[in-house]
Image 1 (cartoon, rainbow, N blue to C red):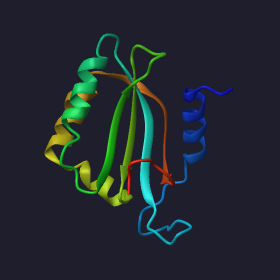
Image 2: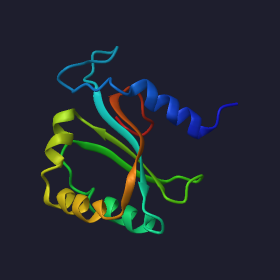
Image 3: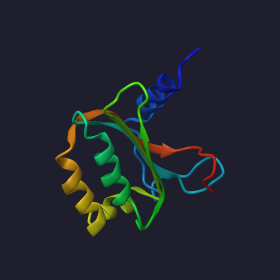
Length: 130
């Protein structure tokens, strides 16, 4: 039986390189496709909590963002998982210019040791999202 982590890694692998914007794709029902980003950040040793705080603090009031989920990797004391769901890729790009996001990037940069698994793609299902 595959672990939850294995399933997440497989999903990221399948979605990598499949980025689409809302304007570029529709799902089987004809609804606009949502844009997603998925990845793992490796915090510097002992910096995970501070990094999480910076990421969460910078994730409010982002037009076009439907979900910004920050999670702790249970198997990696320095691992932080991020899952983002956006109306489209342009909304995500525009968020990078928001003051709170720029501040989070600036503060967080000093706490990041590197980036692990990651990708972007079309969100095809999510409980709780309309």
